[in-house]
Length: 213
Ligand SMILES: C[S@@+](CC[C@H](N)C(=O)[O-])C[C@H]1O[C@@H](n2cnc3c(N)ncnc32)[C@H](O)[C@@H]1O
Image 1 (tube, protein in one colour):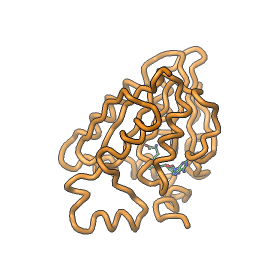
Image 2: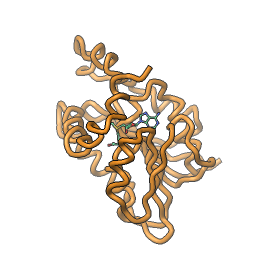
Image 3: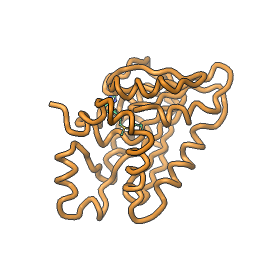
Image 4: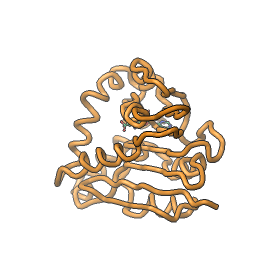
């Protein structure tokens, strides 16, 4: 059965207000305790969006806010693909077309791409809504080329998430708080040894490089 969060993500009205209202409000929630999340997010996105002839995949792209940012400086044969399982979110994404950007409807558990297809694979603000998220981490690694990078932004257990009631409300809504090493341990098990792991305010960022062999 779909969680409350999944029902929201596939709702056309919610999808229409996601980018302008919900995402900024949610980023502010993640920033409880400091301005760090928004600042780190900006710096990481700017790094990932460096110019070049690269292939980028944005997993669980929603209405394409980050897909467009990641694609903005691509050159030549560079391509950015956003994938999401919500038709309503993708309808928003394709309403703002951008050169070198395309969208696919699909499930993050079974990415419809060959092994090593992308130079950069991003998954922002989505793993915590996916009921079975760790196999998705394996998929992010699988479709990244050896030497390529994987960027993740997601939740983490903090003193705020452990306040009475917060976890229960999260569970009811279909929101998961990851243990501090859950994501990095899974990446390591999938064959990634080089990682920068940063916990900022209520969120965590991982920038990992897939091993060459
Ligand atoms: C909170 S939005 C994040 C969108 C975007 N990455 C961002 O940072 O603004 C989460 C997205 O994950 C998508 N999603 C959830 N489970 C998914 C799955 N199993 N496969 C593909 N997309 C999924 C939802 O449809 C939704 O668009």
